[in-house]
Image 1 (cartoon, one colour):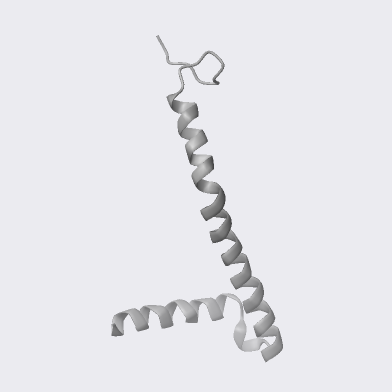
Image 2 (cartoon, rainbow, N blue to C red; image 1 turned 60 degrees about the horizontal axis):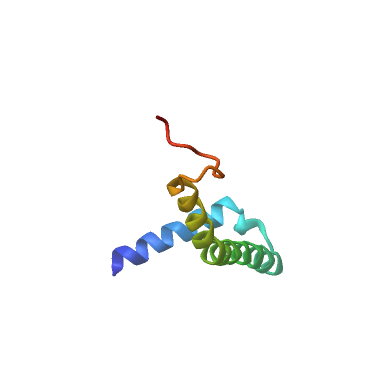
Length: 75
């Protein structure tokens, strides 16, 4: 568990360095954190909602041997 805490602390330190959190005022820090975490949440949520349907359509496209599909097996 200590190694997990060290890894998490290292990741948080990298995050602070990348976004220059040490130079920001507290309200600016909260604003940047809110924007970053909302962006990450929206990316994860949209991947959860849209990725399964996209992948199933993609698999159907590759499996399909219909004449209407974009890909045809080489013969």
